[in-house]
Image (tube, rainbow, N blue to C red; front, side, top):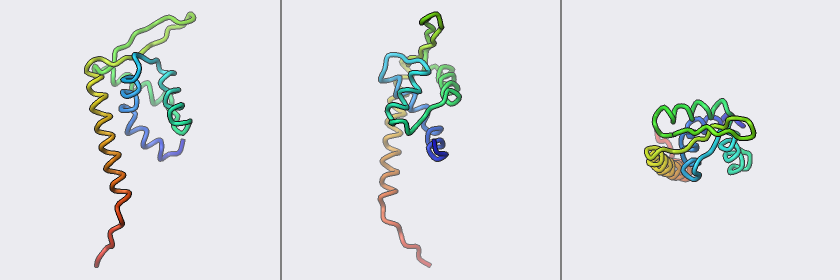
Length: 116
């Protein structure tokens, strides 16, 4: 992933994770990384090193709850939104959509001539 994409990802990771979980009942870490990869056709790759600190922070903030399930002899930790997490997901997505629209407006505006 290019450095620019990495910068954008860091600033939006919380929103990405909350939105993915809002659209699914629950997910585990690998599922989240794969969903990001699939939805972006491999243009964004979310590493576990970036994901797990965000998941832990969201859990500490009361936005996520976890459930450990044994699958094929291994423990898998699933993450799901709390009611507060659902509200926050909606708010974050709405804020981000407004931000994207503002950026589109800025980038599509004609360049202003500088005057002396």
